[in-house]
Every structure is written in structure tokens, then in C-alpha cells.
Amino acid sequence: MTKNPIFITSYEFNDIIINDMVGNKLFCTFVALSKLDETLNILTNKYSILYDKIFVLESIDTDELILTYNIDVVNTNSKNALPNTILLHRKKESNTLYTINALNALIKELNGGVLDTNYKVKWEDHRNVILLTQEGGLRKVHTKIHNIVKV
Image (cartoon, rainbow, N blue to C red; front, side, top):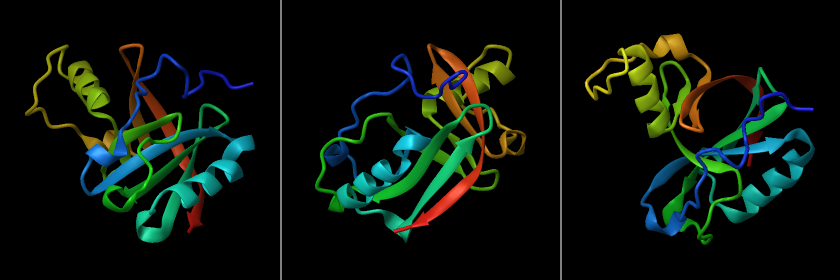
């Protein structure tokens, strides 16, 4: 049984229309271990995966897996992302993944409740973390590499 699951219906998921995007996008798909092989198969058949890698991360706090991968949206035939998938951004120096909503929530948390777009986040404090929002609140998912799948 998963405690504090990452992917639930009240999460910040929405239907991502891929064909309206341009270029290279970083996606994140949340999956149970029992669905890993099936999901990897779907991803590799559905998308043009850039850099020929899918990173399989595991949450330190739950038994869920997080797949991160870049797709070439220009050469992708599919219109919608897989279920339980979100668009992320990444700070390479700390390997922090985040949504814009989560970044805004983090800044408010660190800056006395004030959203200041010029606020400098100390990314090293969030090394190997995915920053998400859930029901309006900030959630920090600590991760480690489970596997790197070459496609």
C-alpha cells in the first residue's frame, strides 16, 4: 500500500495537448512498479524520445516510480500525453524538477508568503527533489535513480 501517493486525481494534472507545443519538452509520468514495463513500451512507441533515455526515478517516501523523458513535440504524432503525466522544468545544477505552480509556492514559502519573481532560490537545498503542488500546497518528492532506460 502506498503512503501519501504522488499521483492522485486532485493533483495538478491536466490534459496536455502536445501538438500545441513547440520543440523539446520534459515530461514526467507517475507509474506503479507493476505498470513500469507496460508504460515504457507505450512511451517508446508513442513518442520520439530525445537523447534516447528515459530516467526512472523512485520516490524515497512511496513505492511509486517517476519516469522523466524529453520528447520532440514537433515529430510526435500523438495529441495527448499519457495519464498521470505533467510537464516539468529542471535545474541541472541540483537535479531539481518542478512545475511553475510549485516554484511559485516554494518562493512564497521561503519569502514570507510573498511571491517575488526575482527571488533567488537556493537550488542546492532541493537536490534530487521534484517540487509539485497538490490541493494548492507545495509537495517535495525526494527521489533517487531506479534505472536509466536506453531506447
